[in-house]
Amino acid sequence: MTVSHTNGEPQEVDSSLEGDPSIERALLAGLDDFDLSEEDLALVEGRRRQAAEDLEAETRPVVAVVGRPNVGKSTLVNRIIGRREAVVEDVPGVTRDRVAYDADWSGRRFTLVDTGGWEVDATGIHLRVAEQAEVAVELCDVVLFVVDATVGATDTDESVVKLLRRSGKPVVLVANKVDDQKGELEAAALWSLGLGQPWPVSALHGRGSGDVLDAVLEHLPEKSAVSGAYPRGGPRRVALLGRPNVGKSSLLNKLAGEDRAVVDTVAGTTRDPVDELIELGGKEWRFVDTAGIRRRVHQTKGADFYASLRTQTALEKAEVAVVLLDASDKIAEQDVRVIQQVIDAGRALVIAYNKWDEVDEDRQYYLEREIERDLVQITWAPRVNMSALTGRHTNRLVPALETALDSWDRRISTAKLNAFLGEIVAAHPHPVRGGKQPRILFATQADTRPPRFVIFASGFIEHGYRRFLERRLREQFGFEGSPIEISVRVREKRRR
Image (cartoon, rainbow, N blue to C red):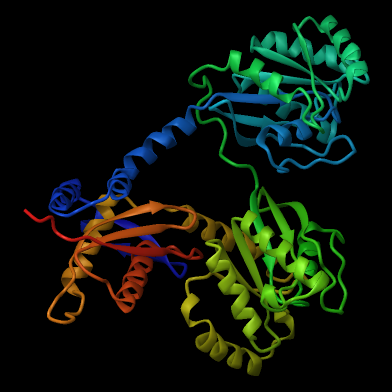
């Protein structure tokens, strides 16, 4: 017997739905009688490929980027992964933990680990940062040691070299901030560190980064000696969305504990997305405050038009969206449109009813009626009643976010999925239309983020029946906080 969660309540799951592999094999054999394209066959076999990819991800080699503070480690990380993911500021000590990213070069995939600056005789938080850097060296296969070529080798760099030698790990020496040929002469002085050739690089402009990565590949093993040491992807990305003046910037400031975003009673203060790394519930999250969505993008003009485009881009880069609604005001068409925008983008969803401190009993009654009327299609989204201004119940955001992201990442085994559908179809068959009754042949989960299911059938499956299947999928397996997509591929029997 297992337990699933629907609307936050644990429910027993019939143990017969655990998934009998023999059922899956029988259904697969039945597919031989139908015309399947190469794409169909690849989809049916996709789960085995996914398992192989998951194993490959776990055993990818690990490259740790280390060095003293402010030598450009995070800038180099961003250059290698090809996007601005690691936080960069022109002050030392911005990176304080080990953060892992997926990277590849010349067809080789590896895990890249950004670390905080390593300092000698560090105390307080700097000591913990240095300890994290030492752990990163232990939990890697190759070290990228970054030195500021414009400054040269310092006493701290010499100390890091001793640490690296003790580790016995292969080291690639990066002489960063080399923007021209004059800088290459300064880089050559780093031969004195005794780590072999210093590779001159400008992480900011990309100069020489390819040569460094070629050197890294020479040391990469086929499989990591520290398999499974790092979770994937760094901090989860959260977009704060909603119509103007619902309190998105106030919430960001409350969570960050400082006035990071401009707040004003005038709607539309935020125009550019504002990023903030925030620690909540014992882990780091990347929150993005966005411009309020006023109307459809093609109906906006001037600065509002570009703000809407940037908001859409921020949503596409996010993994989960918190849509804020003003609980003291009626649910507006714009609110429904923003929620639909999140669903269309395939992102996990949490709905936060802000300004709850302004809601009396009468308003609560009418709000519940509005939710039943306007948001009846998204009862699966976690709901948080809170106040961004006072901070009341903002601590409930993290459990809601984690629930939504778990659902967004969830994968159901093919055997379990088909056993479930078999019972559902037997109890509630598809209606007969025109003397014909379509038969569900086989189903598989094609993807996650969001979960996508493909059903092979002998005839057209009506939209009403698809919605019924979606409801039952949610009842059985949860998926609280995540949109799910169901597509049907109608296939005919082969002619003998």
